[in-house]
Length: 329
Image (tube, rainbow, N blue to C red; front, side, top):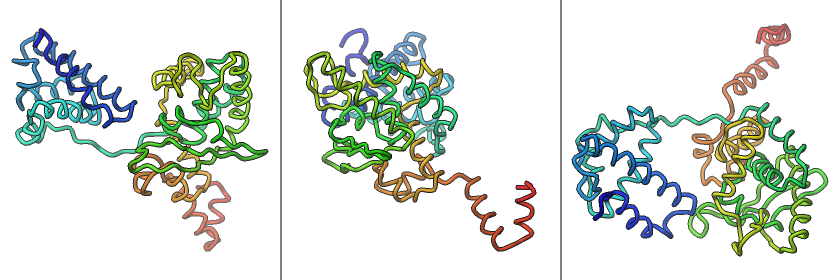
Protein backbone atom coordinates (compact mmCIF):
# COMPACT_ATOMS: atom_id res chain seq x y z
CA UNK A 1 0.00 0.00 0.00
CA UNK A 2 1.44 3.37 -1.03
CA UNK A 3 1.18 6.79 0.53
CA UNK A 4 -2.29 7.19 -0.97
CA UNK A 5 -4.27 4.03 -0.05
CA UNK A 6 -7.62 5.51 -1.12
CA UNK A 7 -6.33 6.00 -4.66
CA UNK A 8 -4.84 2.51 -4.66
CA UNK A 9 -8.20 1.03 -3.66
CA UNK A 10 -9.99 2.91 -6.45
CA UNK A 11 -7.53 1.47 -8.97
CA UNK A 12 -8.21 -2.03 -7.66
CA UNK A 13 -11.97 -1.61 -7.34
CA UNK A 14 -13.05 0.08 -10.58
CA UNK A 15 -11.91 -2.63 -13.03
CA UNK A 16 -14.10 -5.11 -11.13
CA UNK A 17 -17.15 -2.99 -11.92
CA UNK A 18 -16.88 -3.05 -15.71
CA UNK A 19 -19.94 -4.72 -17.16
CA UNK A 20 -22.09 -3.75 -14.18
CA UNK A 21 -22.31 -0.04 -15.00
CA UNK A 22 -23.27 1.72 -18.22
CA UNK A 23 -20.28 3.59 -19.65
CA UNK A 24 -21.37 7.04 -18.48
CA UNK A 25 -22.29 5.70 -15.02
CA UNK A 26 -18.91 3.98 -14.71
CA UNK A 27 -17.15 7.27 -15.46
CA UNK A 28 -19.37 9.11 -12.98
CA UNK A 29 -18.66 6.64 -10.16
CA UNK A 30 -14.94 6.80 -10.82
CA UNK A 31 -15.02 10.59 -10.87
CA UNK A 32 -16.92 10.75 -7.56
CA UNK A 33 -14.53 8.34 -5.87
CA UNK A 34 -11.49 10.29 -7.06
CA UNK A 35 -13.02 13.49 -5.68
CA UNK A 36 -13.72 11.74 -2.38
CA UNK A 37 -10.11 10.59 -2.39
CA UNK A 38 -8.93 14.21 -2.49
CA UNK A 39 -11.25 15.04 0.43
CA UNK A 40 -10.11 12.02 2.44
CA UNK A 41 -6.42 12.93 2.03
CA UNK A 42 -7.17 16.51 3.08
CA UNK A 43 -9.04 15.38 6.20
CA UNK A 44 -6.26 12.92 7.05
CA UNK A 45 -3.62 15.60 6.68
CA UNK A 46 -5.43 18.01 9.00
CA UNK A 47 -6.02 15.25 11.57
CA UNK A 48 -9.79 14.88 11.24
CA UNK A 49 -9.36 11.29 10.01
CA UNK A 50 -7.00 8.76 11.57
CA UNK A 51 -6.64 6.86 8.30
CA UNK A 52 -7.15 7.35 4.58
CA UNK A 53 -7.33 3.60 3.99
CA UNK A 54 -10.90 2.56 3.03
CA UNK A 55 -10.24 -0.92 4.44
CA UNK A 56 -9.95 0.60 7.91
CA UNK A 57 -12.73 3.21 7.80
CA UNK A 58 -15.15 3.23 10.74
CA UNK A 59 -18.62 4.73 11.14
CA UNK A 60 -16.98 7.77 12.74
CA UNK A 61 -14.77 8.29 9.67
CA UNK A 62 -17.84 8.22 7.43
CA UNK A 63 -19.50 10.76 9.73
CA UNK A 64 -16.49 13.07 9.40
CA UNK A 65 -16.63 12.84 5.60
CA UNK A 66 -20.38 13.53 5.55
CA UNK A 67 -19.92 16.47 7.92
CA UNK A 68 -17.25 17.93 5.67
CA UNK A 69 -19.49 17.62 2.61
CA UNK A 70 -22.27 19.36 4.54
CA UNK A 71 -19.91 22.24 5.40
CA UNK A 72 -19.04 22.52 1.71
CA UNK A 73 -22.71 23.20 1.06
CA UNK A 74 -23.43 19.98 -0.85
CA UNK A 75 -27.11 19.06 -1.10
CA UNK A 76 -28.55 15.83 0.27
CA UNK A 77 -28.74 14.19 -3.14
CA UNK A 78 -25.02 14.77 -3.80
CA UNK A 79 -23.99 13.42 -0.40
CA UNK A 80 -26.22 10.37 -0.77
CA UNK A 81 -24.57 9.73 -4.13
CA UNK A 82 -21.15 9.98 -2.47
CA UNK A 83 -22.19 7.51 0.21
CA UNK A 84 -23.55 5.05 -2.34
CA UNK A 85 -20.25 5.03 -4.25
CA UNK A 86 -18.21 4.91 -1.05
CA UNK A 87 -20.27 2.02 0.32
CA UNK A 88 -19.65 -0.07 -2.80
CA UNK A 89 -15.94 0.61 -2.57
CA UNK A 90 -15.80 -0.35 1.11
CA UNK A 91 -17.92 -3.47 0.68
CA UNK A 92 -15.42 -4.63 -1.93
CA UNK A 93 -13.03 -4.90 1.03
CA UNK A 94 -15.68 -6.39 3.36
CA UNK A 95 -16.02 -3.12 5.26
CA UNK A 96 -19.59 -2.17 6.24
CA UNK A 97 -18.66 1.19 7.80
CA UNK A 98 -21.28 3.08 5.75
CA UNK A 99 -24.02 0.75 6.97
CA UNK A 100 -22.78 1.19 10.55
CA UNK A 101 -22.75 4.97 10.06
CA UNK A 102 -26.45 4.87 9.08
CA UNK A 103 -27.22 2.87 12.22
CA UNK A 104 -25.04 4.85 14.63
CA UNK A 105 -25.72 8.34 13.29
CA UNK A 106 -29.24 8.15 11.79
CA UNK A 107 -29.86 11.88 12.19
CA UNK A 108 -26.70 12.65 10.20
CA UNK A 109 -27.77 10.66 7.16
CA UNK A 110 -28.87 13.19 4.48
CA UNK A 111 -32.60 13.20 3.81
CA UNK A 112 -33.47 13.43 0.14
CA UNK A 113 -36.55 15.45 -0.78
CA UNK A 114 -37.99 14.20 -4.06
CA UNK A 115 -38.69 17.44 -5.86
CA UNK A 116 -38.88 17.45 -9.60
CA UNK A 117 -36.21 19.71 -11.09
CA UNK A 118 -37.25 22.43 -13.49
CA UNK A 119 -37.16 22.06 -17.28
CA UNK A 120 -35.79 24.78 -19.53
CA UNK A 121 -37.97 27.86 -19.81
CA UNK A 122 -39.69 28.34 -23.17
CA UNK A 123 -37.62 31.44 -23.96
CA UNK A 124 -34.45 29.41 -23.33
CA UNK A 125 -35.67 26.71 -25.71
CA UNK A 126 -36.59 29.31 -28.33
CA UNK A 127 -33.14 30.91 -27.98
CA UNK A 128 -31.31 27.58 -28.44
CA UNK A 129 -33.38 26.48 -31.43
CA UNK A 130 -33.18 29.90 -33.10
CA UNK A 131 -29.41 29.91 -32.71
CA UNK A 132 -29.21 26.37 -34.10
CA UNK A 133 -30.79 27.59 -37.35
CA UNK A 134 -28.11 30.29 -37.68
CA UNK A 135 -25.14 27.91 -37.55
CA UNK A 136 -23.24 27.41 -40.82
CA UNK A 137 -22.98 23.76 -41.93
CA UNK A 138 -19.27 24.48 -42.48
CA UNK A 139 -18.85 24.85 -38.72
CA UNK A 140 -19.02 21.13 -38.04
CA UNK A 141 -18.44 21.26 -34.28
CA UNK A 142 -21.31 23.66 -33.66
CA UNK A 143 -23.56 21.99 -36.25
CA UNK A 144 -23.10 18.66 -34.50
CA UNK A 145 -23.44 20.20 -31.04
CA UNK A 146 -26.70 21.97 -31.83
CA UNK A 147 -28.09 18.83 -33.50
CA UNK A 148 -27.34 16.83 -30.32
CA UNK A 149 -28.94 19.40 -28.04
CA UNK A 150 -31.92 19.88 -30.37
CA UNK A 151 -32.57 16.15 -30.40
CA UNK A 152 -32.30 16.02 -26.61
CA UNK A 153 -34.85 18.83 -26.27
CA UNK A 154 -37.17 17.64 -29.03
CA UNK A 155 -37.15 13.88 -28.31
CA UNK A 156 -36.11 13.48 -24.66
CA UNK A 157 -33.42 10.96 -25.64
CA UNK A 158 -30.87 9.99 -23.00
CA UNK A 159 -27.12 10.54 -23.62
CA UNK A 160 -26.59 6.82 -24.32
CA UNK A 161 -29.48 6.82 -26.78
CA UNK A 162 -28.22 9.97 -28.50
CA UNK A 163 -24.67 8.76 -29.04
CA UNK A 164 -25.68 5.23 -30.10
CA UNK A 165 -28.29 6.32 -32.63
CA UNK A 166 -28.12 5.13 -36.24
CA UNK A 167 -28.87 7.50 -39.06
CA UNK A 168 -31.31 5.01 -40.61
CA UNK A 169 -33.38 5.13 -37.40
CA UNK A 170 -34.30 8.77 -38.09
CA UNK A 171 -37.38 9.28 -40.25
CA UNK A 172 -38.37 12.82 -41.23
CA UNK A 173 -41.30 13.59 -43.50
CA UNK A 174 -42.78 16.83 -44.77
CA UNK A 175 -44.26 17.95 -41.47
CA UNK A 176 -43.45 15.17 -38.97
CA UNK A 177 -40.64 12.95 -37.84
CA UNK A 178 -39.83 10.07 -35.53
CA UNK A 179 -36.82 8.19 -34.22
CA UNK A 180 -36.36 4.55 -33.31
CA UNK A 181 -34.15 4.25 -30.22
CA UNK A 182 -32.41 0.93 -30.73
CA UNK A 183 -29.78 1.16 -27.99
CA UNK A 184 -31.56 2.18 -24.79
CA UNK A 185 -30.86 2.44 -21.09
CA UNK A 186 -31.02 -1.03 -19.56
CA UNK A 187 -30.50 -2.62 -22.99
CA UNK A 188 -30.81 -6.40 -22.80
CA UNK A 189 -32.17 -6.19 -19.26
CA UNK A 190 -35.15 -3.99 -18.40
CA UNK A 191 -35.00 -1.47 -21.27
CA UNK A 192 -36.84 -1.92 -24.56
CA UNK A 193 -36.27 -0.21 -27.94
CA UNK A 194 -38.95 2.39 -28.64
CA UNK A 195 -40.28 4.91 -31.15
CA UNK A 196 -40.12 8.60 -30.23
CA UNK A 197 -41.75 11.51 -32.09
CA UNK A 198 -39.57 14.51 -32.93
CA UNK A 199 -41.18 17.73 -31.77
CA UNK A 200 -42.03 19.86 -34.84
CA UNK A 201 -39.79 22.70 -33.59
CA UNK A 202 -36.73 20.52 -34.19
CA UNK A 203 -37.54 19.04 -37.60
CA UNK A 204 -35.83 21.69 -39.72
CA UNK A 205 -32.68 21.64 -37.58
CA UNK A 206 -32.37 17.84 -37.69
CA UNK A 207 -33.11 17.75 -41.40
CA UNK A 208 -30.37 20.33 -42.06
CA UNK A 209 -27.99 18.36 -39.85
CA UNK A 210 -28.55 15.19 -41.86
CA UNK A 211 -27.55 17.05 -45.03
CA UNK A 212 -24.48 18.55 -43.33
CA UNK A 213 -23.53 15.11 -41.99
CA UNK A 214 -23.63 13.56 -45.47
CA UNK A 215 -21.49 16.38 -46.84
CA UNK A 216 -18.94 16.01 -44.03
CA UNK A 217 -18.58 12.25 -44.45
CA UNK A 218 -18.31 12.57 -48.23
CA UNK A 219 -15.64 15.22 -47.88
CA UNK A 220 -13.62 12.95 -45.56
CA UNK A 221 -14.26 9.84 -47.71
CA UNK A 222 -15.62 8.14 -44.62
CA UNK A 223 -18.59 5.82 -44.11
CA UNK A 224 -20.58 5.48 -40.90
CA UNK A 225 -24.10 4.48 -39.89
CA UNK A 226 -23.89 6.44 -36.64
CA UNK A 227 -26.10 9.52 -36.52
CA UNK A 228 -23.21 11.32 -34.82
CA UNK A 229 -20.23 9.64 -36.46
CA UNK A 230 -16.74 9.57 -34.93
CA UNK A 231 -14.50 11.21 -37.52
CA UNK A 232 -11.31 9.78 -36.06
CA UNK A 233 -10.42 6.26 -35.06
CA UNK A 234 -12.39 3.10 -35.62
CA UNK A 235 -15.05 3.40 -32.91
CA UNK A 236 -18.65 2.90 -34.00
CA UNK A 237 -19.96 5.86 -31.99
CA UNK A 238 -18.59 9.07 -30.49
CA UNK A 239 -17.72 8.88 -26.79
CA UNK A 240 -19.56 10.24 -23.77
CA UNK A 241 -16.86 12.86 -23.26
CA UNK A 242 -17.42 14.11 -26.79
CA UNK A 243 -21.16 14.60 -26.44
CA UNK A 244 -20.53 16.45 -23.18
CA UNK A 245 -17.96 18.70 -24.87
CA UNK A 246 -20.38 19.44 -27.69
CA UNK A 247 -23.09 20.39 -25.18
CA UNK A 248 -20.63 22.66 -23.37
CA UNK A 249 -19.85 24.39 -26.67
CA UNK A 250 -23.56 25.07 -27.16
CA UNK A 251 -23.90 26.32 -23.57
CA UNK A 252 -21.07 28.76 -24.10
CA UNK A 253 -22.50 29.93 -27.43
CA UNK A 254 -25.99 30.67 -26.07
CA UNK A 255 -24.97 31.68 -22.55
CA UNK A 256 -27.24 29.08 -20.94
CA UNK A 257 -26.34 26.28 -18.50
CA UNK A 258 -28.18 22.96 -18.75
CA UNK A 259 -27.60 19.23 -18.84
CA UNK A 260 -29.07 16.43 -20.94
CA UNK A 261 -31.51 15.45 -18.21
CA UNK A 262 -32.86 19.01 -18.19
CA UNK A 263 -33.42 18.68 -21.95
CA UNK A 264 -35.22 15.39 -21.33
CA UNK A 265 -37.48 16.96 -18.71
CA UNK A 266 -38.15 19.84 -21.11
CA UNK A 267 -39.39 17.49 -23.82
CA UNK A 268 -41.76 15.79 -21.37
CA UNK A 269 -43.06 19.01 -19.83
CA UNK A 270 -43.65 20.67 -23.21
CA UNK A 271 -45.61 17.59 -24.33
CA UNK A 272 -47.75 17.67 -21.17
CA UNK A 273 -48.33 21.43 -21.50
CA UNK A 274 -49.43 20.91 -25.10
CA UNK A 275 -52.10 18.51 -23.89
CA UNK A 276 -50.56 15.12 -24.72
CA UNK A 277 -51.70 12.17 -22.64
CA UNK A 278 -49.21 11.47 -19.84
CA UNK A 279 -49.34 7.75 -20.61
CA UNK A 280 -48.06 8.47 -24.12
CA UNK A 281 -45.39 10.82 -22.80
CA UNK A 282 -44.24 8.21 -20.29
CA UNK A 283 -44.01 5.58 -23.03
CA UNK A 284 -41.89 7.66 -25.40
CA UNK A 285 -39.61 8.69 -22.51
CA UNK A 286 -38.99 4.99 -21.93
CA UNK A 287 -40.40 4.80 -18.41
CA UNK A 288 -41.95 1.61 -17.07
CA UNK A 289 -44.53 3.50 -15.01
CA UNK A 290 -46.25 6.89 -15.10
CA UNK A 291 -45.15 7.37 -11.48
CA UNK A 292 -41.53 7.71 -12.60
CA UNK A 293 -42.53 10.29 -15.20
CA UNK A 294 -44.56 12.37 -12.76
CA UNK A 295 -42.13 12.15 -9.86
CA UNK A 296 -38.90 12.93 -11.68
CA UNK A 297 -39.62 14.43 -15.10
CA UNK A 298 -42.90 16.13 -15.84
CA UNK A 299 -46.52 16.51 -14.87
CA UNK A 300 -49.39 18.86 -15.50
CA UNK A 301 -48.55 22.20 -13.91
CA UNK A 302 -50.61 23.52 -11.02
CA UNK A 303 -51.59 26.52 -13.13
CA UNK A 304 -52.81 24.32 -15.99
CA UNK A 305 -54.87 22.23 -13.56
CA UNK A 306 -56.29 25.41 -12.08
CA UNK A 307 -57.20 26.82 -15.49
CA UNK A 308 -58.86 23.58 -16.60
CA UNK A 309 -61.01 23.53 -13.47
CA UNK A 310 -62.00 27.15 -14.00
CA UNK A 311 -62.80 26.42 -17.65
CA UNK A 312 -65.14 23.63 -16.59
CA UNK A 313 -66.84 25.90 -14.08
CA UNK A 314 -67.05 28.64 -16.70
CA UNK A 315 -69.12 26.40 -18.92
CA UNK A 316 -71.41 25.60 -16.02
CA UNK A 317 -71.54 28.96 -14.24
CA UNK A 318 -72.15 32.29 -16.07
CA UNK A 319 -70.84 34.33 -13.10
CA UNK A 320 -67.43 32.62 -13.24
CA UNK A 321 -67.46 33.05 -17.01
CA UNK A 322 -67.98 36.80 -16.63
CA UNK A 323 -65.14 37.09 -14.07
CA UNK A 324 -62.77 35.24 -16.40
CA UNK A 325 -63.77 37.45 -19.34
CA UNK A 326 -63.13 40.57 -17.21
CA UNK A 327 -59.62 39.34 -16.44
CA UNK A 328 -60.07 38.52 -12.76
CA UNK A 329 -58.41 35.11 -13.35
